[in-house]
Amino acid sequence: MKTTFCIVFISCLVSMAFAAPGTATFYQQYTPSACYGNTPVGVMIVAASDPLWDNGAICGKIFTVRCTGPTNPFPHPCYDGKTVTVKIVDHCPGCGGTLDLSKEAFETIANPVAGVIDIDYW
Image (cartoon, rainbow, N blue to C red; front, side, top):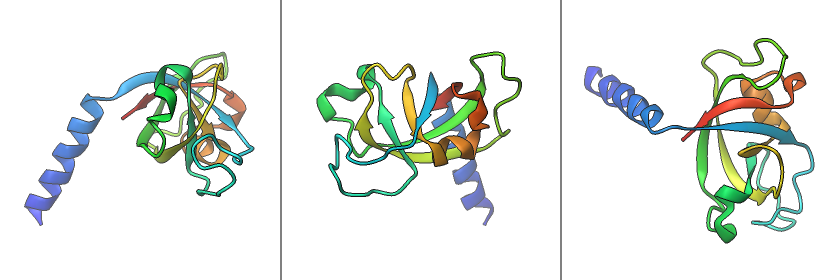
């Protein structure tokens, strides 16, 4: 039991050490998507910005996302310690953020009234 806990704890620390900073926005229309067309793939999903898109090579990749702070005057948008696991299903050219989360994914980690948040993702 102690060994399992140690392994899980260390893997979490290693994952967070390799986290990339970015910003996140959210959207509400999930289909059609650039990766899966009209096939629904759930609601814990995300669209990738141009720098991540890589001609669709990122389709299906799974990320863990954590809110790290506000990008605007909205105070304290983050739900402390919360993370969300999302799957890349779409492309958001010029979306204004690194990741464009589904509204359900966004509201898991932050208050959607904020609109845009700083994030770490890995």
